[in-house]
Amino acid sequence: MDTIEISDYWHWDGKLMDDLLAKGWYRSTQDMFFVDSHEFDGSGEHQLIWIRYLLEHWKFHPEILMKRNRNFSVNMMNFLITPEIEDLFALYRSQIDFDTSYTVRGYLLGHYASNTFDTILTEIRDGSLLIATGYHDLGDESAAGILNFYHPSYKKFSLGKYLMKLQTDHSREEGKKYFYPGYVSPTYPKFDYKIIDAGATEKFIRSKEMWVPFL
Image (cartoon, rainbow, N blue to C red; front, side, top):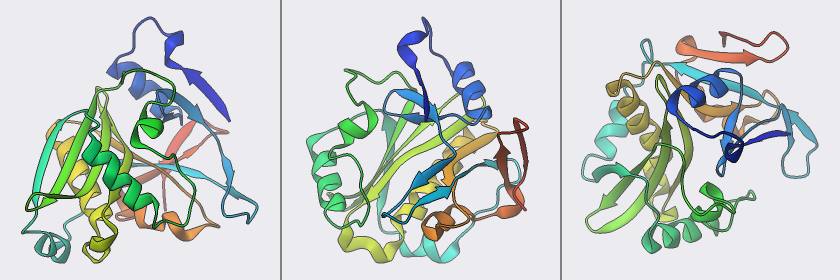
């Protein structure tokens, strides 16, 4: 895995984020990295395929999903980490079957003291109860989904997909061209949920340094 420390740059801005995302880099804590394979669940190395959505053509209109979540409130705001968010992440982490950071702060900031990215926080609440949280970054013409998690008791509401719907809609409203949700793997189907509109999805071919249609 190769990593770029943002401290190497005297000025970090949306254009730099666009350029790095377009070259197949992605955010980890406050750094950018790229990797093309990873080991999951002790099952050996799996090829990773980095993808992005073309928001101009992106079609994601899940009527059932929207109706299922219509009674929940949604609020988007600038980057923030609160004890309430950390408590929800701890609850979420206790129910998942893969390794991740112990805290939201560890996931998003690592050893850094503050957030350099232009990050949007999305909160979903059932009444006053926080049931889902998501973070996505904004560049000049791109956005990237970084972290989504939800209350285990609300798993049937597909809040991860609902957060993705909210984030891609927001990115398009902000005039972004691309949304980068991370990677999928042809041999590890856990990430297949990211392939929602394959016709409006591109994949990165690192050997040619170019994006091509996913299909």
